[in-house]
Amino acid sequence: TINGVEFAVADLALAEAGRTQIRLAEHEMPGLMATRREYAAAQPLKGARIAGSLHMTVQTAVLIETLVELGAQVRWVSCNIFSTQDEAAAAVVVGPDGTPDRPQGTSVFAWKGETPEEYWWCTDKLFAFPDGPPTSILDDGGDATLLVHKGVEFEKAGAVPNPGEEDPEDYRLLLRTLAESLRADGKRFTRIAEEIRGVTEETTAGVNRLYRFARDGELLFPAINVNDSVTKSKFDNKYGIRHSLVDGLNRATDVMLGGKIAVVCGYGDVGKGAAESLRGQGARVVVTEVDPICALQAAMDGLEVLRLDDVIERGDIFVTTTGNCDIIMAADMLKMKHNAVVANVGHFDNEIDMAGLAKVPGVRKNEIKPQVHEWTFSDGHAILVLSEGRLMNLGNATGHPSFVMSNSFTNQTIAQIEVFTKPGSYAKDVYTLPKHLDEKVARLHLDALGVRLTELTKKQAEYIGVDVGGPYKLDHYRY
Ligand code: NAI
Image (cartoon, rainbow, N blue to C red; front, top):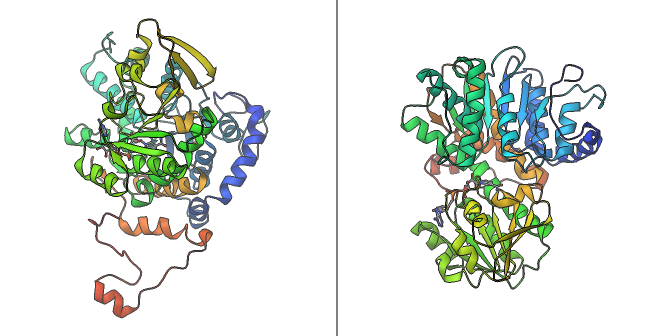
């Protein structure tokens, strides 16, 4: 703690470098900046304590400072051990008007290259506001929400979590963090859950967890699914990855993509963006899918759709985008070409069987540079694994660019205002934002691109059965 600001970041001296990047990002984030102007006087988040767990990047810094400008007190962690940009974290702690000696900003607990143990230590810190429990969570992937739910579950049962060897590493570490917390205070998470008015969730993986909690009647507070705002998943997941996947591949390996065979596992929103970016580089893209609709889409988009086994020996680059587990197993990696690149952009690190890879007899791991590892098998052939199987567009590059994140984060800000200012109007269920707000987010980004939107005439509006000012589509429309 310095000057009353509690934090754990790599180096506050990086703040100035972070601030210049934030300044440039603000220009590219018209939605967030317009939201600041719109709510400057009303201060709708005054009194809110927002616990945020989302990649601590430059773009996230603009989100955090938007929430603060709207009146909120904020604490922040990253939702991935490799995704923090240390200069952004430092700048947020120092704040726009502070100095490294006298920080005046926001409490951040995040640095690039946390160990998994440190990751859960940070996540636990997220909830310790000096003046009471958080009023809301802003989550990406659902780890902060999961910690609260698991905490309440153990507190109710009066049991201390006891991680077993068979539990996956991440879950074992979560349980260990909980055990320590419960020993210190056996009702902590119950109090936190009672205070929380809602969570706003950023990504597909976290949203899936929320719907499962809701289905099983276990959701402890209302949730807004930000991911499924059209201006989030059809933009960030797709156009964001179209930018940052190739960025990550280039920074990691600089291997020529043109002419290579790139295998994209999963053709959902992220897979579509990944395939497009690789094709844009002249790679020959092969897709794997389990869903016949997405498989047909890939084929109609002109891509080959095969099983992983069909291309395992021919592929030069493998990218997982499924949000599912066990996509590329150790036995698959053994069959790959020399120096094939293996990368994941799905939220969690269980798409690629890293544990199995480490157990292959005779395998050797050599660090080419941070987040780029050469794994050499006993026959002498090797593969390159990026970001140890974790989100590589954030581990090897800096994630999605500001403009697309402005769409996602404007939705986040609107969702935070909803849950904080309307307590009681949402049940313990998962909601999406109404379409008129989705359209508003898009509208805020048109001017910057010189888009001139056509206006409906009254007659036309009546003819298609909408208002002149929108919404322009019914809720079931898929874009
Ligand atoms: P999605 O549900 O639209 O797409 C996933 C696709 O994978 C589906 O079409 C599904 O049928 C397919 N799939 C599932 N199991 C498969 C298997 N065994 N083999 C082949 N395909 C399989 O989800 P979305 O939005 O594309 O997100 C995917 C993942 O990426 C999630 O974990 C999400 O949280 C994450 N994400 C990552 C971002 C990043 O910056 N790296 C940005 C946005 C989302």
